[in-house]
Length: 185
Image (tube, rainbow, N blue to C red; front, side, top):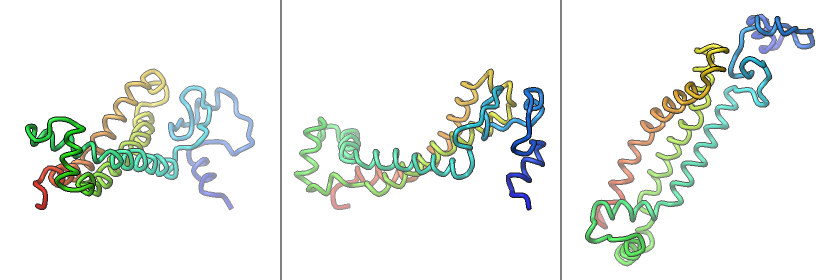
């Protein structure tokens, strides 16, 4: 019986574990950015598999969704200052006005679309950045990637951010509408 990783290794021409491999042999084996560093072929401490990308996505949800939700009172005040500049003239004054007119609950307006939208943005930003890094590195090839790592990571970051922002935009629109509508509407 051969496990799935042994079948994949055999298909890719990778010798079985325990086989002596020379430097010349390692260069003839297909390189994969998900598993090894370029040129040195040093294995990643953590292979970039679906579990790894999933953990990156969870990290993005936690780091973006929770932090943006935590500062909703400041965001509400900022949005109201932009829409009603004569009524909300500063941060402290704006916070006091919101509490006076809408109660403390007025400082929580839009927390749900903020949590949903920024969680989606973080999920795609962090998870797809890692996936695009590996995809673009593999498309470029080992030597090209080693020489142009920064540019490839830049392309991966930009690609992930485009998807992340598309995921955020609908909830950001809802959030701003909820936060800037007159009280009681």
